[in-house]
Length: 451
Image (cartoon, helix red, strand yellow):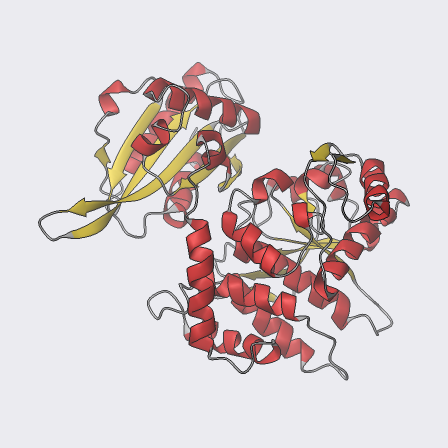
C-alpha cells in the first residue's frame, strides 16, 4: 500500500521537474523510469485535482465528506468509465448548489494491473489522461484499508457491479447503476437502476444527461470524457452490433456523440472505428505471462456458508481468452505442473480457497471450414487458507458436482484430465453463454449450501 505523504511529495517533485527530464522519479512506492507526461484538458485536470483533494482531506480527517464511485475489481473499460463519468457528474451537477458533493472514482484494480488490459491504456491515452494512470485513484493507493475507510466515508455508489465487495460492507450504499442481475442489494439506494444493456456506461450516460438537461445551467462536458464514454459503449457492444447491443445503447451513444467534437460524424462509423481500434488492442496479449493472465480479469469475494467451522469461503474467478494448452506454453518450463505452481502462487497471494479459471478459444472445424468457440473450466481448491484438508475435499466435491451436473454446460473432461492432481479438474464445453455471469452464480449457490 502506498504512503499518502509519499504521493503528495512525489507529485510536487514531479511538477517541478524540467519537461525533458527522463531519469527515474520516485512516486510513492513505485519507480517510473519513463518520462512523466501530464494529461491535457479539463477531464484529466479534474481527475488529478480530485484525487489530490481527497488525499488532503484524508490527512485532515475529513473522509466523511467523500463519496466513492466504484465499479468491479476486474477493471474493464466499462467499469472504469462508468465510475469516472458518474463521479464527474456528481461533483459538477452540485457545484453551484448549497450542498456541493465531493465524489471520487475509485478503481478497485491495482495500478500495475490496469495495463494488463491494453484497451484501457489506449482509451485513457486517447482521452489525454496522464501517463502511468496518475490521474486515477486505484485500490492500492488508498491510505488505509477499505474495511476501516468504509466506516468513515459518506458512502459509495456502485456502477457495473450489483453488490459491494465484502470489504466495503460497512459503507452506506447511496446509488447503484448496473446492467447485471439485481440481487437485492441497497434497496434504499437512489438512483437504483438495473437494466440489461451491453454497457453500464449506457445507463450512466442516460442518467447523467437526463439530470444535466434539467439543471438551470449545464456544466461543461469535456470531449475527452465523451470520447471515453463512447469507447466503453463501443467495445462492449461490438460497435453497436445489433446482436450484442440494445436500442438503449444506440440511443444514448447518439446523445453522447452530439455533445462531442465528433458531432458531425456518423454514429455507426465512429462506433465501428472505436470498436476496431480497441478490439485489436484488447487481443494483444502476446507479452503476458500466466500470472498476468490470471490477474488481468480476476474477480472474487467471500461467500457465506452454513458451516459453523468455516462461515466464509473465498471464491475467485479468472477469465482468460486463451486455451489451457496455450497458457501452459507461457510458463517457464512449458509443463502442466508449472501451470499449477504459478496458479497456486497467485491464489495464495489473493487468499482464494476455491478458484475457477474460465478460458475460451476458437478451433477450426475442417468439415465446415469455420471456427467454433471452445470454453474451459479449471477448478482448484486449496486447503491452506480457511479450510483444512477434509473441508477442502468436501468443497471440491460440492463445486465439482455443481459443474458436472449442470445440463446447459454439459461439460466433458479436458484431454489431459487424467494427469491432474488432487482437487484439480479441467473441463471443456461449448455453451455459448457459459462465461462468468453463468458459472459464478452456479458456484456461489453451491458453496452457500455447503455444510
